[in-house]
Amino acid sequence: MRLTPEKIQRIAERLSDELAERGALEYRPPNGQRPTEARTLRIRAIAAAISADLAIEDEIDTEVERILDSYSRTLRGTERDVLFRKHKEEVARRRGYTL
Image (cartoon, rainbow, N blue to C red):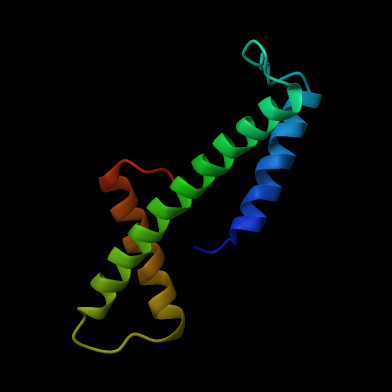
């Protein structure tokens, strides 16, 4: 995963706060729950969604690496980068994942 849990947490916090500030996020805490607890749960849910999405992309990257490793010759530099992107788009499309 390219992002640390701390960075994912900060992104989730910022996203939650920005959406709430813009009025694009309406969240009513359950009865008896303090607003800070509700915010914490909301941020935890956003962070989990980001982590799950990154995990899917990591799986796709792993599959693409296996495909490239199966080539009979060694790929280097720009050629490897171009083929990596091409295969990644194809694998993502096959899985119904939007990059």
